[in-house]
Each structure stands twice: as structure tokens, then as C-alpha cells.
Image 1 (cartoon, rainbow, N blue to C red):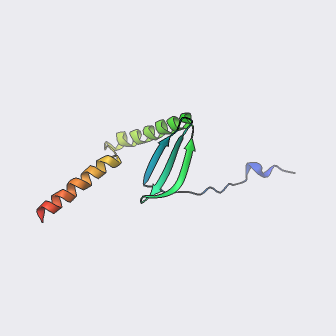
Image 2 (cartoon, rainbow, N blue to C red; image 1 turned 90 degrees about the horizontal axis):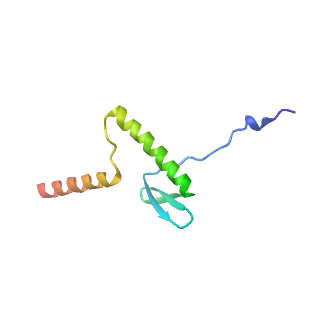
Length: 93
């Protein structure tokens, strides 16, 4: 009988998120992935995994910024820009 486990597919659900919250305990890091401010997924990970994930994400974003010669804005930068735009529009009216 053949071993079918090597060809077996596993279904994994995907999730899109556009925000997050991070919490730190003395044992691990927890994250809540948000979609439009609403919790979608809770992540729990070790400090080692969190740091490894952080470095991997930073590396990929850095590569994209280098090849596009464009910095990717972080949420705080976008928030600052939106506030400035709203102020500018309110002053014009």
C-alpha cells in the first residue's frame, strides 16, 4: 500500500487584516489581527518566533523599498497625513 500522506493537501484558511494590537506577557507575545478595527484572529507566539517573524517581515519590506526606491509608510505616518489633509480641508471651507 502506498503512503498517501506525502500527497495529502491540507486546507488552511486565509485572513486579511489592516490593523493589529500587540500584548506582551512574561512568557510570550500575543497579537490580535484586526479588519477595520474588528478582531479577526488571535496570534500567540514565543519571543523567538516573534523576533524571527519581525526580522523576516522587515527584510521583505526593505527589499521592496530598495527595488521600488519608495519607502512604505507606517500607519502612524498615514494617520498624520490624513489629519493634515482633514485640517487643510476644514480650513478651506
